[in-house]
Amino acid sequence: VQLQASGGGLVQAGGSLRLSCVGSGRTFGWWAMGWFRQAQGKEREFVAAIKWNGDTTKYADSVKGRFTISRDDAKNTVYLQMSGLKPEDTAVYYCAADRARRRSTVVTGRHEYNYWGQGTLVTVSS
Image 1 (cartoon, rainbow, N blue to C red):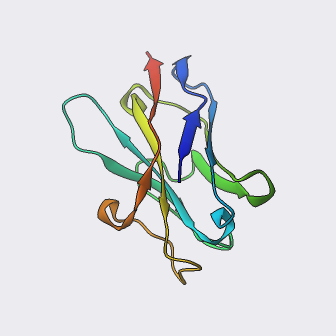
Image 2: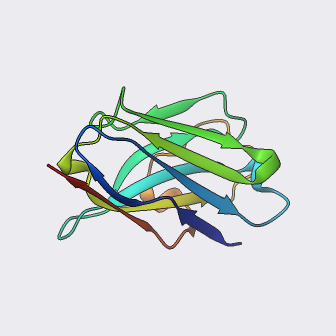
């Protein structure tokens, strides 16, 4: 299983970016998916998660109301739409997949995820 994240870049505070994560495998549509981020010198932290069927999402308090996670299983892709970006959102963003099929809940714990993308850097200037 491979996850390929893209869409990062440099943006001014208040701007928007959309991250994409494309996964391989025929069972992508059965996986819970998540986004995490890691700022320099800090631990990797949860950002957003979506249930395998897309009917439930969860966000970190720091991004609630500004970020939206979604998925398009026809394209094996999960998205993170980010708006109202702040300098403190600067980090490497990672997508992750939980290989447990059709888990009944969203997955927010870093150690619950089995597969990780390579990360994409988001830099927000003030």
